[in-house]
Length: 234
Picture 1 (cartoon, one colour):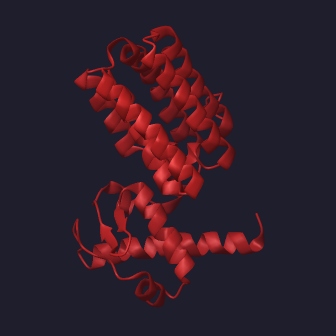
Picture 2: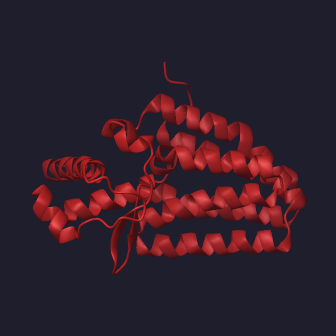
């Protein structure tokens, strides 16, 4: 990484912290509108590109929602708002390992059950999700990619028609964005992800629970290898 990109990253991280402080100091609740990008840049004394990147990251965290043409709005106030930035943005090996360890225990079995139970409407939603992911891939939209990726795994769980499994998947995806963010950090991984999703859906469509299990396991293992998480951190 160049000195220029390091500097840009630091400015973006500073902007994230400052925007979070503004939300707290101004007691902004869900639905409250933030200042415009220009006014935020002036207030925080950083460039608009840093503000834009900060808002994009806060959107991934689920703390704000950016509505094109309207601005950015506070979406949620959670413990993440007060957590150190390093805990939210950096690759914490142990946390990421635990994230994928839990998913490895849950999701292959979930995919297998989805292959046995998925309805036509459930399959239709999965197919549509893959197309949405491809659209975001073409647009190089990382926020959209992460959202589509999270939604894919939720839809697989929903296809099981087991509310407990669906609830478990929703909880994992809602409370640990770091694993999803880190998993799609590289463009190569983003492209491979959609192909792996397609294999999972194909197995579900064919009602092949064994292949669905193997495809989901392979998908998660590929993400772990990409992040260097094949062994538990000491």
